[in-house]
Length: 168
Image 1 (tube, helix red, strand yellow):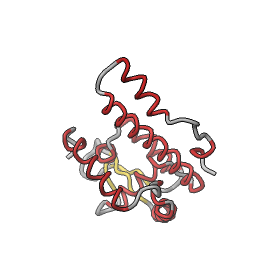
Image 2 (cartoon, rainbow, N blue to C red):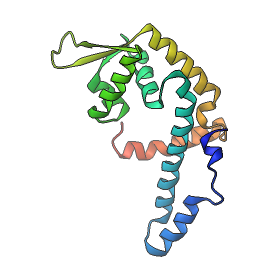
Image 3 (cartoon, rainbow, N blue to C red):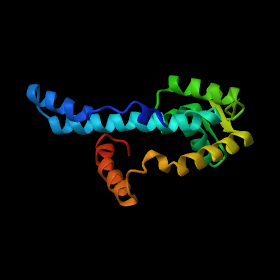
Image 4 (cartoon, rainbow, N blue to C red):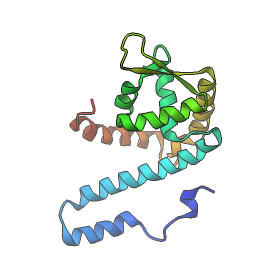
């Protein structure tokens, strides 16, 4: 039983907040949409973190391993990792240190930029990343309540605010 199931609320907190919000302020539909989005984010992150815990990972650390595995050389500068994952540089360092301590990545000086540090995925890191990917795929990324078509619709809906915010 996941944390989500153990802590199920007897009411929809987003709808309750929307009712309260509507009596005081405007933009209730957008407030409700953002609150729903943020709640789903937290619920999914909790579920995925629980799934990855036996492998010694969090979803954030898993994302670093996947990103490195996608790179041509299996390595990226720490700054690029932060950029691609949209996290502040100060958040990348603890992720990388944890992964390095677990021998899933290796940090080395950048051969062309003396100021930069490269993170490289190790063979053990690739193995753990593949096991983690199998677990996440088998859990349907925590979105088993949605059909493939609904996932496509959700992606389409979320692309518009991402583009408007300058994500791409």
